[in-house]
Amino acid sequence: MNHLPPVEHFKSSTGVDIFRFSMQLFPNGFVGHAYILEGAGELTLVDCGSGIGTSNDDLLAGIAGIGERFDRKFGLKDIQRIIITHGHIDHFGGLAFVKEQSGARVGIHELDRRVLTNYEERVIVATKALGIYFERAGIEPALRETLFQMYGFAKQHVTSIDVDFNIADELVIDGMEFIHTPGHCPGQVCIRLGDVLLSADHVLSRTTPHQSPESITHYMGLDHYADSLRKLLRFEGIGLALGGHEDPIHDLYGRIHAIRASHNRKLDRIRKIMRDHGEPMTISAISRAMYPQVEGYHVLLAIEEAGAHIEYLYQHGHLRIANLKEFEAEDNPAILYSLHD
Image 1: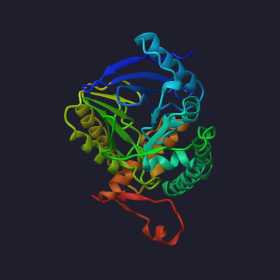
Image 2: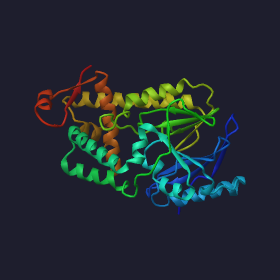
Image 3: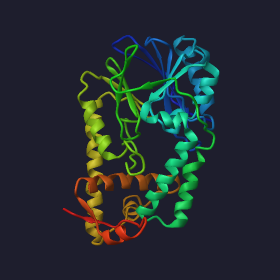
Image 4: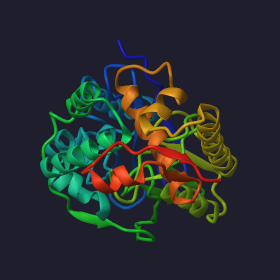
């Protein structure tokens, strides 16, 4: 039985009622939030869960809970507009179910639009790019196969779906101000409603959001993410941020500084690991040293997270390729990195 947070209500300084409800996104207990906005034009749903396991049932229960707790009688048929904050399956996997029930129009940032409209193509392209990354990261073939299986497992139930309108940076729709914040995902957007920010997965209350290298997907990577954090710091007057997971954030600016400090610690840790090792290392070897206890799907996340930070250090001149002649001569050899500072 799911033990999900209760439905919550927030109100922006612009008079928008924001209702938050939660869903179990994956059977491992991973929980995320969706939001219904009342008072920002058409009744709008922001994100819709994964569509996996109990996620769709939790979504229906959450909407019903709004009526039970706050006396607002919404149903899926009342939703006229769906905003997908970014193209990760835990935020859009339930879209087909919601769209079929509601007939609502769907919007997503143009950099993630293809994830919805050409889903099968996107999976193939991303898998190919991931394979090249695995080789360059120095991951053994047997582990590569296991990681591919885990990568593809949760993507099997999703098919392409039409998008009705694009979201772009600085676009304002019915008082919703969209802020493009790439890094965690190419088309990641935050939504400002007066003094409230729906921060999606760009800023979370406890977790430093997962990073993946730009060498796998354009507009991802730690450089883009750091730029997007700095971008949010320029928006004054935000008193509350509501993420796609975890708790409300009452000090957005302090949380941004804490996330930046966390990434700086990871960069320092990589340099220390390499300095202590004393010889050139692959991404795979550095990842194992950083995250020695991880298992299952978290192995893939660890390899991507370490890789994003190694990529940043290389881009900023702190690392060099130690086996450059081999890299030049062979098709796609494992890259050995050494310190260059």
